[in-house]
Amino acid sequence: MTIAAPQANAPLVSVQQIQEAITSGMSNFRPERVYGGCARIYVEIGSLGGYAETDPEIKKANRRATNALRKQVKKACEGLGRIYQAKGYGVSHAIYIGLDNATCREYSQGAQVARNLKALGIPAWVEGVGD
Image (cartoon, rainbow, N blue to C red; front, top):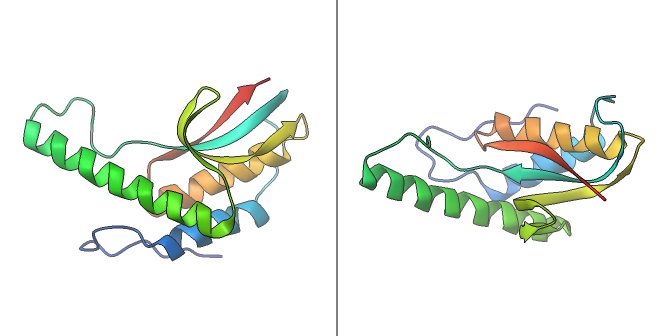
């Protein structure tokens, strides 16, 4: 499935686009054998803009855009019945994928969800938090 990226002048990625990225990643993933233990699997949502940015106005704008984007991700998760955690178990601003019992299924799903979100311009990565 191809997920369309947002238009350049669009202020936010739509909730529907985020839901499609999550749903597609949960069902259309390629198996990965990179994680070897049991862990809770999350997809963390990063910040927009660079950490080296020194202009306070740009930093403020990036922070506002990041907060708006995370609200969209949270709405998308609520619409899908998925858990979005602002803080929890060693992660922040993360979508809970599931508990991986050394099968790599949940890790693979999380990795695909992260790739799909990145394709939309959302900074995201998969994170495994051990028991």
